[in-house]
Image (cartoon, rainbow, N blue to C red; front, side):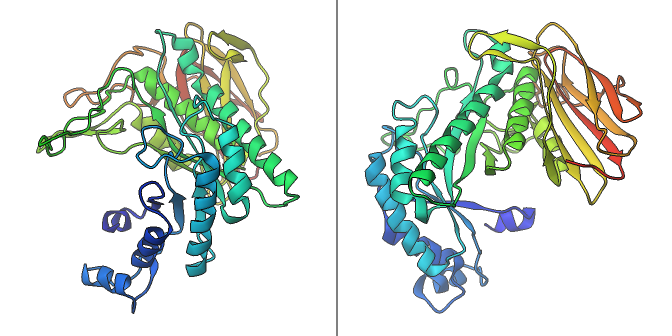
Length: 397
């Protein structure tokens, strides 16, 4: 929490509804957010933090449907416990944002029925429901891997529809939002994850240290496009994780640190996707994938920042062997120029960053962008992610 304060980041905290329950959840809330004068708040102050942490966003458990969980519960059992815990936490602070556990991933055998049954019990007491998804190439199928955003789109749309159906049955005007609080590229089939056992408890064992390629960075860029496009319902999203463990940053003990390839689209999107997300009307060719069928060859999303007068456009060319000629029509805005156009990918998709070679996958200038009145034309290399930033005096969503 002290580190988060220094980094000016907002925390998301999970309570244990598996092997623990409501009492421990409100204890943690008291410790974190009560100003003082109670046993646990005074314990926090004795530990060196006088002011409450003020954590707003809380997850009511995590992946409670998973058979790998010691405290696995049925959907109805979990939903009732989540509702009970939410009621108790809101007695302390009615303004908290509370996240119910959705399915651990789209492939869970109870997907859909789990969301329905949990929300049937907890709809009135929670604000969001969680989604988790990790992607990797299967059987060297690069075209399907590059279209992973299509799977994320369908996942979000499905959970949104289920939540709205529960709300309709309840005749509720409330909308349940989405917390996509775990997502990334993760080579689960290739990376061992063996927890310590017996007397073997090593310090910081090397687990899940995926080394990401340029192709992985393009996929991460595409997933960010999907999340932005659904920002009317996805109000929280967390890339898992930060350092070393399936992470955009790698380090060596006592040694160097470097950016992985997936760092770059995340950092650029986080920095420049500001203001309002615009409704992008895509019109163009399609490409066929083995996993997702026919999908748009180019995926895109755009944002408008009224404060800075910037339009940012994020694009992915999912086709592996053909560049895409794109026209970005921004006739709703008065364009005054191109600020920047950079691309990740297009060449050497298998390249990975190392401590000695940390620049593979770094964004490089895309010099093809040209303004023509109220439009910008540019070329997207095959299998690439591109960010285009424009200056405008006004924009109409």
